[in-house]
Image (cartoon, rainbow, N blue to C red; front, side, top):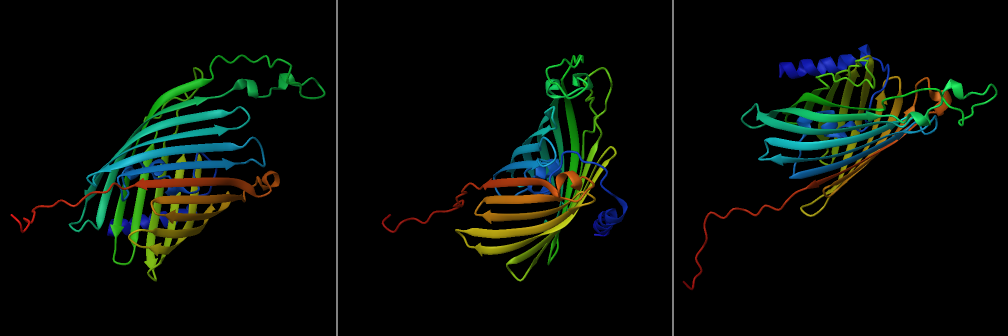
Length: 333
């Protein structure tokens, strides 16, 4: 308990000590992409199979839009072992700089208390990262004819390589604590631990280790309501991102045949954006929508417009018939 409180204090201290210096691939709805957040989240759900799709589109008002698409699927075994797969595709800028990555994730659950109120999930991932750029889509100073830009002129540039593929692996842990009135979830993950070379030429350009840390509290009240405050902090090299906010959940209907709930939330990415989100649960489906309102120094070009993000999740629960240990003989025997 003392360790958990110290970790909570550590996360709160981040609010005063970090600013956003840059951006890597990120998600505003980070809780809706659990395997990207931490490999220990693979298989950590109520059901047999889970399928998630995420899509993000930003900076359409400034330049060529940056788009990120993610698909993931995972399965749980005996409520202890989780296996999952995650794929994402990121396209940025006029040169269509594309990053594809596929990860295999595995996790294991440890019960730290007899009543399973405190559990620790340990996970790891192994991935293949592929990057490429289309040099022909870029513009160069040699294509300026003295008056205007002429795309028919040769750039006089020679590019011998436009692709790079390497392996990457990471590690993560999730600590869950269920108290009488609320739940606390603490997550920490490290990615690119082998620091692969991502340089296109002979230069050795090490890919920085990415750390992803999150804290979430789930506080039910008045039977149908739930408050879900969260904090996420990511760091990769000189780039840092701090996201803080909360979801408000209203459980509209819950019966043995139908489950409906609605979510609304507000978030702040430090020195970058305000984020508003809406979501809904319907049976085994979840649908999420968020929008970033840009507040950085780019607002003169963006006019406060940031990016939209969508999330869809489906959990498959197979019917498991009860085991019958005995049978009653009919009367006619």
